[in-house]
Image: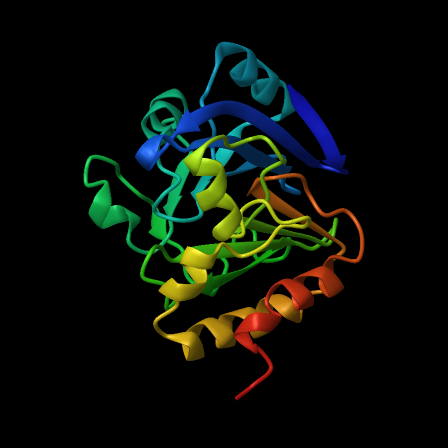
Length: 233
């Protein structure tokens, strides 16, 4: 179930979930083992007994990360299974989930526990969700949740396939869906955050919904966000 992606970095694909209007989404999480041996869990998927056993072999789960307020479906199970782990929320999630006790709301400043190993940037100004993007320094991997998506041909059928195509969800390479582009009400805030992201020496890009980009990640990201004119002031 755990797939090695880079040293001390694993990906796990979870079950397909059904969202609004019957759209089906693949799920994926990342596991990073920090230098202290603790595990950093990004965008947690459904927690099976098999997955829990594999994680327990890797090390203690210390940080569970909800990178936007849409990726919260399985947080309760993770909080129950790992009560000693710190639960970190993207901006807006704590208000949505008052049933959970969050350790922190993620900001542009990485917590001391991982600031030497992982950078982060809050992509604000979007009316759908505020997403926190991460960069794992050792593997030079940037992690996006919903702002970049790529579903394979045939994933959606009927009218959903048409909407997905118009929404740029089935482009040849991972793209920013059109609904998210329109939802950027504060483009200045988004550009500021993305300048930070584009400044990272990215080699690979991991996304929650689609295959990773494994080479020339910095050039790919520059092209993927060219429509936003990130370099304009």
